Amino acid sequence: MIFKLNGPVVLQPYEQKFVKPPLLAPIHLGKEVIDCPVILAPMAGITDRPFRRLVRSFGAGLVVSEMIASQAMIREVRKTMQMIEASDASDVLTVQLAGSDPVVMAEAARLNADRGARIIDINFGCPAKKIVSGEAGSALMRDEVKAARILEAVVKAVDLPVTLKMRLGWNSETMNAPRLAKIAQETGIQMVTVHGRTRQQFYNGEANWNLIRPVKEAVTIPVIANGDIRDANDVVQALALSGADGIMVGRGSYGKPWLLRQMMDFLRDGAMSPAPSLDAQYKIVLGHFEEMLTAYGTYSGLRNARKHMGWYSKGLPQASEFRAAVNHAGEVDEVRELLRVFFERALEKGQEVFPG
Image: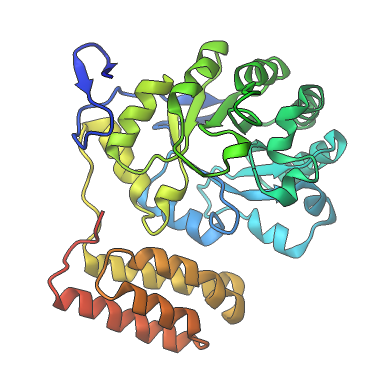
């Protein structure tokens, strides 16, 4: 199969060959403008304030907070309130809400607006059992009437752009994303992001970007493609197959906070900018670690940082030994020393640029 992009440009599927992709138009959401629509996906336990700030420091069209439970927002749970702080003064704070009660969702949206949110995103895509069992997340794709009530309630509650993130459907027999996108547009939703899997798939198999195209054809609002977008070839394929107006990057950013900037450069110039040198990489990792300690305190910061340390080390010499040592380290200074030795050893072995 061959896919065409803007006429003569041709790319074979999954062939690692960089070609100039289509130039994406800016996306306007009310007063907000996404100049280059490469968006950091909301990811529980990942897109906290330190990580969002780091990704923004390299460049991203938009970054989205971790998913916030609307009930917790109403109760103003301390942990929840920390999750929705802006990463810096220039951050277009975009908060994703999950819930199943239209009244509660609307109130949570108002509270976020009062706290400085500039875009509200609604979650109809989370496949986690805990969320689905509460009739939230992707469970709402099974109840279009209830979904419509939630969308309408949130849009009416705030004078802000409201967006929606969802999946293709609950399972392969009920892929109703195009119909739900039309409902969303009619209620006033201004942008839809579609993960190219059903809830039944969770994160198994491959994202089906071609199944996002019917959503794009069903509405006039911007549609964003999401799922398994990790490199330049994926960017080209996802846009070609889906016809989407932009991309959302999730797990591909693990250990690569600069990836979104690379993709933006690729969309603008047709070439991926290089990853940071390993020396710069060490400073990035150490800075991220220190900011997590500041944000969470020593105990929680150390534990929250472990997964990031593992992702940063991937592909480097003796990464598995490093990860094991970090996971057992109980002191901050111990982790700092492990980082120093690990990256110095990699530099001595001639690993000048971070792999990937």
